[in-house]
Amino acid sequence: MYNVDYEQRIYNPERMRKYRLERGQAMMKKYGLGALAVYDYDTFRYLGFFSRHNYARRRPGTYVLLVKDAGYPYAQLDSTGTSEAELNPWMADKFILENQTFIELGVTMDDDYNKQLWAKQADEIKGLMKKHKVADLPLGIDLGCVYLDQALQKAGVEIGDGNRAIAEARMIKNEDEIECLRTAGAITEAAHWAVCKALRPGVTEWQIAGVAAKALYDLGAEELEGPSFVVCSGPRSGHNVPAMPTDRVVRPGEMFVIDINGVSFEGYRTCFYRTYCVGDKPTEKQLEIYNAAYTVQRAMETSLRPGIGNHQYIKDVIKKSKGELPVPKWPKPGKYHQAHNHQLGLNSGDPGPMAGVTSDEIVAAPDFQLQKGMVFAAEVGTFEWEGKNWCYDGCKLENTGVVTDTGYEIFYRFPYKDLIVCGLPGVY
Image 1: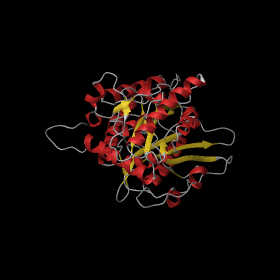
Image 2: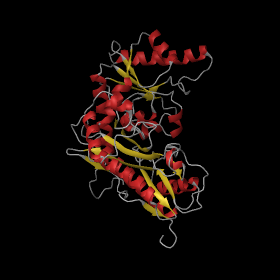
Image 3: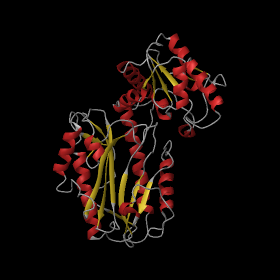
Image 4: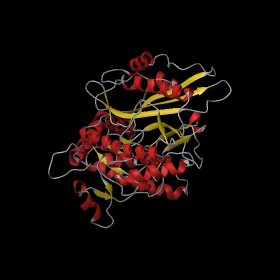
């Protein structure tokens, strides 16, 4: 999992930091930006700075400032004078920003107080842009609020779209990022195994979420982003997916859907759906729904390749789906598949376009070309509408992988070709 002194391994933190910084600087130039004011927690890490606790994700108000041709970003002043510089020596001279708001973006407070905070921040940003002779160029912002926009405009700073530049930078992963994603998957495979061993009639969805969480932390997961696992059993698997786990008791013969998502290794995350049958042999209907989902899942995975446009990809998936796609026109009875590919990296859903086959918005979106190094989570949900209600049983499957020179490398190895039965008396 980690680097050692006795052999060369794939994951190289220093190389990864430099690659990501170069991507950020390159996209800033591509979109004509003089600097980037970044408020997103995970993009801090992408650019080389790590906020020490996950609660910062819920309180976007602090920022880092990436300046054109000035290396790593400026970050908040090291109040102790030592700790941050020691932990992040590559940024030792960059801990100078004094005007962090320490409040959530857009929080409603006294207007005059808010305006003062944002005015100080705007002046600080403008000062650094002047220092680096880029004050005549736009400042890109990834997240913002009306107070920040007003303060920057008053300070004479032109505002540009920083989110697009960051999104494009993060879309193409290098070998180190890919190895971190593989490792997060390996950790999560162990959690799926623990779930299979614990699943039986009488447990609650909450208990199984706890089993998964313990297995992840035991194997070194950095954080679980919540945990925000999707856990849906019985009738909740039939159409209420995705949803958080509840105190519902799992009963014999039910389908059990779980997405162990947001599991982080070095910041890189998972999206990892599997569906199991609990406490009885699966019925013909359950097998039918599961096999339909598997057919669409494999159609998506085998169609992802470099150079293909999103629109052609959709056509290829439909052709390979053996009649499962396109879905019936609502509300006609039949199987409905939610099939799409979202990008993944430092977020459970990284910024960037999706490749999908059942959402009108995705199908109608401008075409884009898949490139080597793009990481997609390919997922399908299969649910059957019987005319007046949804079928009791549903299914979701998902793998994450990277677009390679020739196709799509799946990171996850936990089996999914056949519906796995857990907690069957006399067998497990």
